[in-house]
Length: 430
Image (cartoon, rainbow, N blue to C red):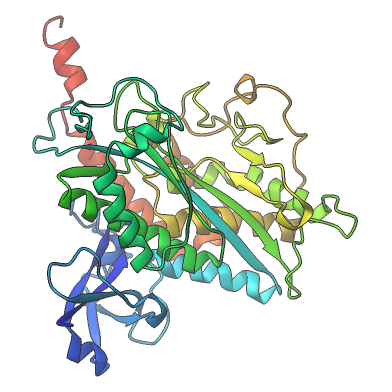
């Protein structure tokens, strides 16, 4: 082994870090990086909000050795490890997404509880994209033609890109990513992988590495793995549904009573999700593209109604036995940072437990017939989080301030763009 990829997820969920010689890593050499790096904008810019010191101080990167695995995409023998960012005083860096999730999980532990999470991640495979001004196109499969039409749950369509799936499966197996089912989704060359449930931090690490591996293996195969929420006009959006439950110190699901019925705690948890999710929408939908996904009738929710086995609701309670009783938060897009999306939903649920929030009545029939109670645009979500009395206490005051600064800068950057829509319709008519 020559090197170790010392990586962490930035605020977008993109892998950043440093490459360290293997001998230095094994010897415990201290590794540092600028404190601002976890809050790098998707455009590569940095906010000048005073929350980020002008002195640009260092933080220490400390590996979680449980994540040390051989890198499946490296061209030379190399390992990787997910790192935590620590301030020089030994405290977790509040700007690092993994820190935000760890702090939320610690609040559960203080209450004698353990949250359990399982994500379902959707993404597209497209042909290589060399010109970002052009739309994404479907790749050519082994049959010699691109996929046409909807092939939801088609095994033949899944097999069309078998070389990618063979390499990707080997990669995630090597990384210890515990995948469950694989399927072809509704969109052309859109797929979904379900990860097995477990500890939120460990599962978020797996989701982070899953997305990283998908991109790397796709590039090796001459493809792009695309996790945008709405990458192709007229096609289905991509989500990251989050199944969640909570167990007590004895490992019992607190959402189920001894007789198998739902407990008051289950209702309180759902009530917390309903009460606080709108203020946290910018975490579930972190880009301007994210809001194109929330379309009535698309199985992407437009409100925080809840229902039994109802995919038109933002919060779905799947059919299950008492031990597996859970709620599925269907709001997060595939573009959401898995650490932050899990932190947001778990923080809202815990607040519901602590405050005994009461849920609305479960929705019957079509949830899209209910009022739209979520921000409809990036700008609206940004303003709602900025004016929220709750976001800072749920996710951390310094993190929320830094996050808002980053998202404000990204939005200002977007507003300076001239889009294809403007050229198409405005150029000949105005």
